[in-house]
Length: 267
Image (tube, rainbow, N blue to C red; front, side, top):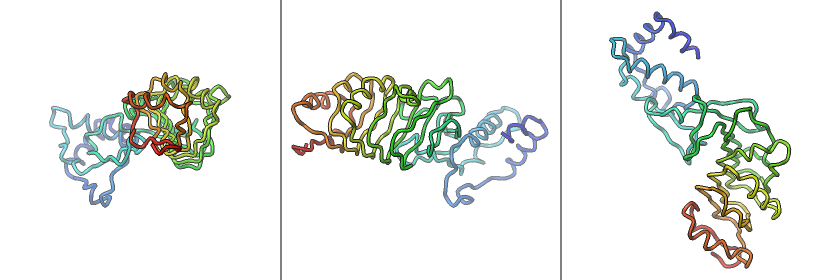
């Protein structure tokens, strides 16, 4: 924000251009190969640099001054480490921390343009709670105007799904991306049925791999999911779950099918 304020002055803008035309920052050497973090501060800097480098006048900074600038996309937006040239990132790859409201022991993010693009889903708010020793999904109330949410709770100790009609849990009905990988999910059967039927109304990407789930409610077939992982659970292949085999085989959105096993027959 300070840079934006300073560059509103033509004098400071001229000094900024002169400075970058005389000096090149070798960020690989300066940071020992460690990339920058794609946050809102860098987003504002990129906007300034794009404005100046795109000018047709003589007040132009050459893009080669920034070739060594690399930026690491927040891992919540990717499934692994992604490092890209700073000036080639698009706006949706920058995210900004929002301190309140946010669940305890979690970090919340918003996009500099008002949205975040995560795994083909566009959301207003991203809640990052992975690896924070959560015992249950938290109750909280997002800001007014939030209509879509992505939430990550991977590698915690959560055993069951909450009642999204209970106080503080309405946010789940706004969630279109939910990562619950690597918890201890052994959901209560009636509660799981209600969760699938009433809570997943906007769900597009649901990740439940590496838990202790023993059954799936048949109503999950009606959820408008575009990606679902249920591999490496403890599904019981009894008469009540006979429907699952044909559903898994015919559903292209179910991921890693080769690692969906039955506890009583091996596969």
